[in-house]
Image (cartoon, rainbow, N blue to C red):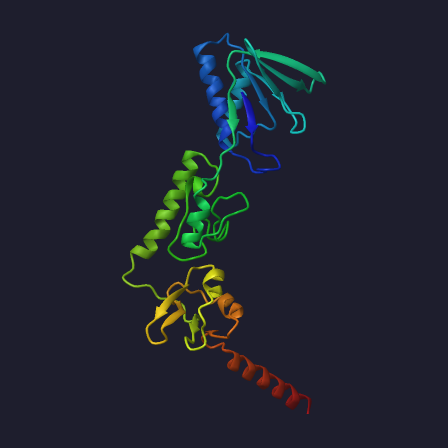
Length: 274
C-alpha cells in the first residue's frame, strides 16, 4: 500500500486525512484473513490521529512492514509478470525492491469540479484547493458568509464519516435557528441604489460577496438597473465603493453625509485650537 498518492505535494498540499486510518483497517483485515501474508506500507507520515492510533500499533504488532519515503524520492512501480516496487529504505540507506501480487494506492481526496459553479450560484467562497470555505473556523465553523447557507462533510474538506455526521448535526442546528422563527430581523445598515444614476454596468453585482445585488429591468427607465435585496445585504460597502456613477450608497453613509461629518470634525478641531 502506498500512502499520500497525489496529496501533500506542491499541486495539493493538504492531507486527505482518511487514508492512513483506512489503510490500517485494511491491513488488519488482510492479516486476519491470512496471518502469513506479507504486507508493506510505504508512507510519508502516519497520521492516525485519535483512537485510530491503536490500529497502527496493532498493525506493527501483527508484522506489517512500514517503509518511509520522501516526496523527492518517491517509490517507482514496474509492471511485469509481477508488480515490482522500488523504494529507498531509510534505515539501510539504499534502494530495495519489493515484489507484490497487489498494489493499493491511497489517492488524494479531490473537491468536485462543480464546486466552482455552485460557489458562483450561491456566492459562497472556496479555499485555494477548491473546497468550500466557512465564515470563521472557530466562531462560525458551519456557516458561509451569507445568511441561510451552511456546509458540512466533504464539501468542507477531507474528513471521516463520523466527523461529517457531527458537522451535519451542527449545520442542522444552525438551520433550525432560522426555520424556528416566524420572521427574521435584518440589519439596518444596507445599500440603496439611485436608479436614475445607475447605468446597469453590473460591477456591483459582480463584487457583492453575499449575492445581494442583481440587475433587473426597470419599466420606468426602460433599462436594467441594480436592485439590492436588503434581507441579504450586510452593509459591507463594497458595491458603493465600486460604483463608477455614485449610484449606490450605504444608508446613513452617503457621500454628502460623510463630507458633512468631515466638515463638522474640522470645525470642531478649529474651535478647540482657538
